[in-house]
Length: 123
Ligand SMILES: N[C@@H](CCC(=O)N[C@@H](CS)C(=O)NCC(=O)O)C(=O)O
Image (cartoon, rainbow, N blue to C red; front, side, top):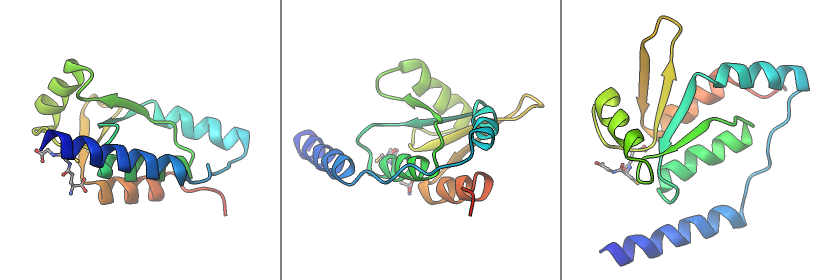
């Protein structure tokens, strides 16, 4: 089972790199504002998880350099996800609000819609 998952992961990564989407463009000033807003965002994820790849591809299309937190490589990220989000499931987008509370958004479709709505490219 582990070997099957490993091979599938390899295929997902290969397809991802072979079909990398084009990075979206903004004016330098707009991009700087977006990147400032993104400092309060982080994505808990795994490199080969297909749902995480879907979110990372959307991030690339929208040119959103969100900090990636690998929950397998770093036990602290894994623990933060379980404690804060309530379950060990990826992808999960963490949004730290100014009042100190953190929002934990699961579900790749929901994350992609949120990013498209909140950080659209220029028309
Ligand atoms: N419907 C979810 C599926 C996410 C999912 O199944 N992620 C897997 C990794 S590829 C996971 O975290 N599984 C652990 C679990 O469900 O406990 C989405 O679209 O984000």
